[in-house]
Amino acid sequence: MAIVISKKGKKAQKIEKSSFGKEDYLQKYIYANPESIPLYDIKEDVRLLIIAKEFSTSSGPIDALGIDKEGDMYLIETKLYKNPDKRLVVAQVLDYGASIWHSYNDFNEFIQIIDGEMNRKIGISLNQRLKNFFGINDDEVVNLIENVKENFNDGRFKFVVLMDKLHNQLKDLIIFINQNSQFDIFAVEMEYYKYKDYEIMIPKLFGSEIKKDIEVSSGARKKWDEASFFEDVKHKLDNKALRAISKLYVFSEENADLISWGTGITRGSFNPKFSKISARSLYSVFSDGLLQINFGWLNDDEKTK
Image (tube, rainbow, N blue to C red; front, side, top):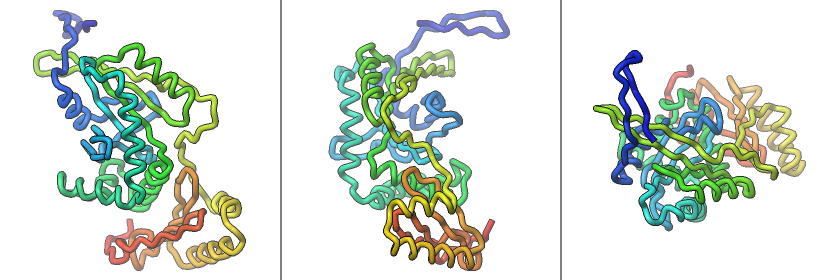
């Protein structure tokens, strides 16, 4: 396939499709330009933040790990069509998902590794990177990390296979998997053209057209409130725990300056903020009975916005 370019409707030139040459060039392009992955065909206004490159697992390194503002996790694997094992790329990316889910039983360990790598490579913490990239505040960062945690613990990943050319067998396999499974796998065909100092990418996404007939948690976020939170508590916990959480909520309501509500997929949370002590929530209470104390913020002197 070729494309035609012109300047103000004149001097049209035909440009033939180019080759990436090496697989690592495609990887580096995705690292620098994650917006070139057409996730907007999956959901509108999505922005992808690459949080790790060549992330180590027991099955080998994952080319890229990404998250969006809602806390969905993306495992991205790049492969050139000329690669002899291209037909195995789906099994490979699924194996990476199983490996990362099995290897990191403690989500906090996983996050600490990501945070440490980010500090080492770009000199910024994961929390600060999330704030800067998505334009969110500290409480929203807490909710985002909690959503990532839920997806991580449930093995609810979105798999993305990115190639310079897709063959029909791979497209058929992805359609079959998406139609008969509770997770999502997508393929991106990235056409590449070069003209002088310009690079032209034409991405095409496959797999998003499948509408699952089975009941699947799609990862859609829910904005919790007092009524929905305590309704969830009643379904998950006994009366003793309900009374304890109710007392915590009454205390928070009477003493906190603000209570923000979480957006978790499977459980709700409320996050009280005491501005005289910290600009951030000192603790989070979840509808499954978890009480999370945010020790790292107890000495926070940031002014309330």
